[in-house]
Amino acid sequence: MTSLILHHYPQSPVAHKIRLALGIAGASWQSVDIPRLPPKPLLTPLTAGYRRTPVLQIGADIYCDSQTIARAIHEALPDSRLFPSGHVGGAMMLSGWAEKTLFDLAVRVVLTHALDSAPPEFIKDRGSLYFEPNWSADSLRAALPFVTRELHAALSHVESCVAASSGVFVDGNAPSYADAAFGYIAWFLRGRWADGPAFLAAFPKLCAMEDALADIGDGMASELSGEAALEIARKATPQSPIGIIGAIANDLQIGQQVTIRQAGETADPDVVGRLRYLDSTRVTIDHDSAETGAIAVHFPIIGYKIMANQDTA
Image (cartoon, rainbow, N blue to C red):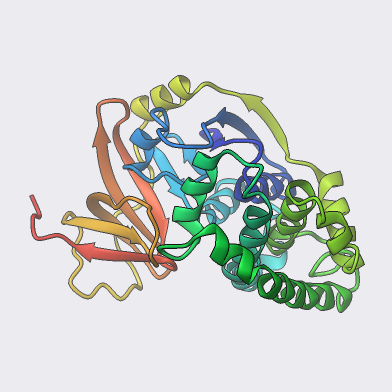
């Protein structure tokens, strides 16, 4: 099997979620360090311009967004333990809620407290991704008490969920991707917010899960350069299927030019390519660049808009 290559940086909370997933899955993987801020010249040729972190590469197949990355890890490893007993749907539902509710709240808390200490260019960049248009430091500070209260309430749901299990994890003593989706929120709050440890003390079950995930670790990683990763893609051929299977295609057809856009009002650039594959959870485009040759770039259906372009050449 072609190696799993993760493009990430150590401080990224979402990358930490995927590193936890790699540890749960028992994976060996290669690590490519990328910049925290654009430009990312050794990454975006692989992603057709997608800029978020992390990105998983398997040869000439490139997986964007943690939804597709988690599924790709599971499918690539015959003995993966990422979804015990095959409970993919349940774990993905929980992780989706964690991503849209817990992480959004946690980002607001962390970045609001960092307004006076983090580099201004970092705050500006992340604000364009996570906050509403025309946000301001004053509006974030004014909302902080409400956001913090809402985060506390949401984490109370997580605490109850874990407390109802027979072990330290959501499903008992076997960790899954759902645990990674909760554990990385605790890791993020603890490490990036001075009051995080005190705030998390109200959730002992979540903290115990966080410690158990740390004991599992991140799998077995080795370093790889960005240039070497591009060369691997250039020498490989996409292995993903071609076709439309079990999806609501509407006007979409294989081979036509499509635009993939992040849902919501964010500063994420559009991604354009030729539709290669579509099913109920994933969309894949064919993309070519001088650096990579022909590659296939994968995105989830949830959270993205897929639009047919007029030019189908």
